Image: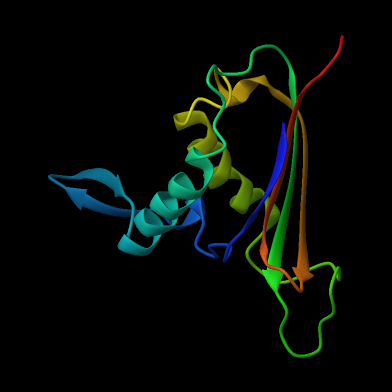
Length: 131
């Protein structure tokens, strides 16, 4: 399966969870901005979710396409934050929740790229890996 979703890529990432202490114990929570990013990704990805979760070893290719800013051009690699690995963590959590795969541990090959793009959005390719 592969698809492109024209959208504004959330720049808040899973890394931005917060912690506070309650009765001497740490309690982790998601700030409002992270909750909204998760909800937005869920809404966008739900329409492409497979009827049944994919099984077996999988390859996930993700291209995060950020809107052009002054001094950038279409297809130019984006070397500024957020980091690819942090973007992917939130994405895989949402894909897991939407049953794209039985569990994200099945993703044995991961290619994540981020670019500046004339058309901002998210490209996803999820394929079974042949043994």
